[in-house]
Image 1 (cartoon, rainbow, N blue to C red):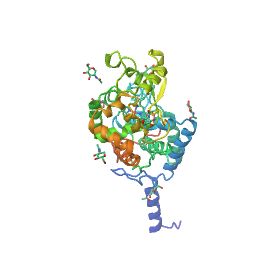
Image 2 (cartoon, rainbow, N blue to C red):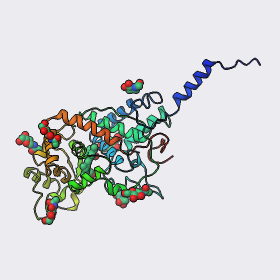
Image 3 (cartoon, rainbow, N blue to C red):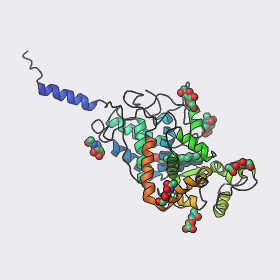
Length: 329
Ligand code: HEM
Ligand SMILES: *[C@@H]1O[C@H](CO)[C@@H](O)[C@H](O)[C@H]1NC(C)=O
Ligand SMILES: *[C@@H]1O[C@H](CO)[C@@H](O)[C@H](O)[C@H]1NC(C)=O
Ligand SMILES: *[C@@H]1O[C@H](CO)[C@@H](O)[C@H](O)[C@H]1NC(C)=O
Ligand SMILES: *[C@@H]1O[C@H](CO)[C@@H](O)[C@H](O)[C@H]1NC(C)=O
Ligand SMILES: *[C@@H]1O[C@H](CO)[C@@H](O)[C@H](O)[C@H]1NC(C)=O
Ligand SMILES: *[C@@H]1O[C@H](CO)[C@@H](O)[C@H](O)[C@H]1NC(C)=O
Ligand SMILES: *[C@@H]1O[C@H](CO)[C@@H](O)[C@H](O)[C@H]1NC(C)=O
C-alpha cells in the first residue's frame, strides 16, 4: 500500500545497469568496446586459440589465413563463416577456400563460450580478428592491440571470393591491384606475405613451378635447385599428389619469424606469388630489409594487420551480432 517511490539513486542504478548490459553503439572501432559488456572476451579467445594449437600447431596459420580471406570479401564481417543456404552461395565453397580454409570449428567453439558468458554481445568478425592476432602471438610472433566493435554481415558473396582473393598464380601486378582494391598498398602486400612464415600449402598450389613452368618444359628458374629436388619428390608429377602438404617456410615452419624473407633472398619461396616479390626492385628491397631486421618486420606486420582488420568493417547499427557464426540470425 505504502509503496516507496524509486529515489534518484535507484533510478541511476537501473539506468547504469541497462547501459552496461546493452551492446555498445559506436560508429568506430574501439580498444575498450567490450570492456563493460564482455570483460572476459580476450581471455576466452586467447584460451580457445591456445587449446586448439596444443591439439594441432598448424591451426594458428589456418586462423590467420581465415581472417585474411574474410576481410578480402565484403570487409572483415565474418561473411566467410556463413554456411551455404538454398538462396546463398557461401564463400567457404569458393575456389580459394574450398578444401583449403580451415579452423571453422575453432571459431564455433570460442563463439559458443563467448555466447554463454555474454549472449548476443560479441560479433564473429571480432572473434576472428582477435583469434588471428593471438595465433601470431602464440606462434612466437609480435603482438598488436586490436580495436573492436565490428558487426557481422548478413550475406556471403562467392563470386567476390573467387575474384578478389589473390591467387598463387597471379602476377605481382595483379596481387598489387587486388590489395589496392581493399585500400592496402605495396608495403602491405610485402609485409603481410610474411604470414607465410607459418602454415602449409597443397602441392597443386605450386606444382606448376616444378615440371613445366609456363609451358617452358623446365622448372621455374626462380626456384632454388635443392628445394626444387625436394619438392619434386614431395609432389610427383601426377594428380595423386595434389593435396600433399609442404611448409610455406621449410626452415622454421611453426615459428612466426622473418625467415620467410630470408628464404625469398635464397630463391626458396614456395609459391610463385611469394617469389615474385623479388622480381621488382622496390618490393625486393623491402624483402631484403625485413630479412635483415626482424624488429622492422614485427613493427610493420602489426601495423598492416591493423589496416587489414579495418577493411570494410560494419559498425554501429550496421549488420548484426550473429549468435551462431554459420547462420544469419
Ligand atoms: C599475397 C597474396 C597471397 C596469396 C596468393 C596467398 C596464397 C596462399 C595459398 C595458395 C596458400 C595455400 C593454401 C592451400 O594449399 O590450401 C596459402 C596459405 C596461407 N596463407 Fe596465404 N596468400 C597470400 C597472402 C596471405 C596473407 C596476406 C596472409 C595473412 C595475413 C596469408 C596467410 C596464409 C597462411 C597463414 C597460410 C597457411 C594456412 C594453413 O596452413 O592452413 N596469406 N596462401
Ligand atoms: C579495457 O580492457 C583492456 C584489457 O583488459 C585494458 O587493457 C584496457 O585498458 C581497458 N580499457 C579501458 C578504457 O578501461
Ligand atoms: C585436433 O586436430 C586434428 C587435426 O590434426 C583435427 O582433426 C581435430 O578435429 C582436432 N581436435 C580438436 C578437439 O580440436
Ligand atoms: C567443394 O569441395 C567438395 C569436395 O570436398 C566438392 O564436392 C564440391 O563440389 C566443392 N564445391 C564447389 C563449389 O566447388
Ligand atoms: C558480389 O561481388 C561482386 C564483385 O565481385 C559484385 O559484382 C556483386 O554485386 C556482389 N553480389 C552481391 C549479392 O552483393
Ligand atoms: C611466360 O611466358 C610468356 C611467353 O614466353 C612470357 O611473356 C611471360 O612473361 C612468362 N611468364 C612468367 C611468369 O614467366
Ligand atoms: C639461405 O642462405 C643462407 C646463407 O647462405 C643459409 O644459411 C640458409 O640455410 C639458406 N636457406 C635456405 C632455405 O636455403
Ligand atoms: C630498406 O632499407 C634501406 C636502408 O635502411 C632504405 O634506404 C630503403 O629505403 C629501404 N627500402 C624500402 C623499399 O623501404
